[in-house]
Figure 1 (tube, rainbow, N blue to C red):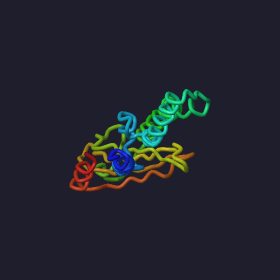
Figure 2 (figure 1 turned 180 degrees about the vertical axis):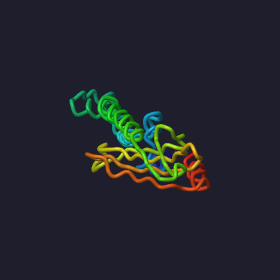
Figure 3 (figure 1 turned 180 degrees about the horizontal axis):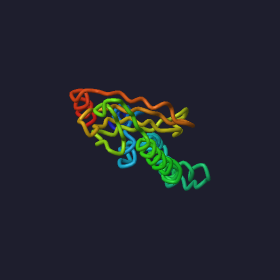
Figure 4 (figure 1 turned 45 degrees about the vertical axis):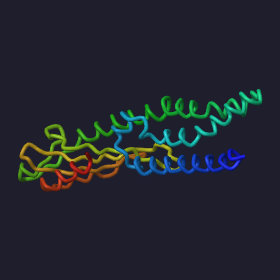
Length: 192
C-alpha cells in the first residue's frame, strides 16, 4: 500500500531532477561556447542536449519493447534516436565545425593593420595570441551557419589588440581595436 503512494512521488522527483539537470546544462554551455571547446569537449555540443532530452524516451521505448514484445518501426526508431543524433553530429556538424575553425585561422592570418607608428601596427603572422575565443554561430533550430573570429593578440611591441569578425555566407568587416594590457589580462582571466 505504501509503495502505491511512493511511486508517483518518486516519478515526480525523477522528472524534476531531470529537468533541473537540463536547465543546468543549458546555463553551463551557452550559445557562445568556444569553438575549440566544442571540438574538444563533446558535451558542449548542441547535440548533447538533444540526446539528454531524448534519452528518457529511448529508455521508455526499450522497456516497452522488452515487456510487450512489440518491435514496431516506431519503437525501434524511438530507441535509436540518441544514436541517430550522434551519427548526424559526427557525419555532418563536426566536420563543418572543423572547416569553420580552419576558415577562421585562414582569415586571421590575412589580417594586417598598418599605422605610421610601427608600435600601433598589427600583423597577424607576427603576433602572439593571448586568447582565442572563436565561437560557432547557430541559426534557427540550432543549425550551424557560421563562425565568429574573436581574439586578443599582442604585437612585437607589446601592444594588445582585440580582433573581431564574423562569417555567415560571407565575412563581415574586420574590427581591430587596440586595448591596454590590463583589459587584455582581465579578458584572459575571464575566459579561463
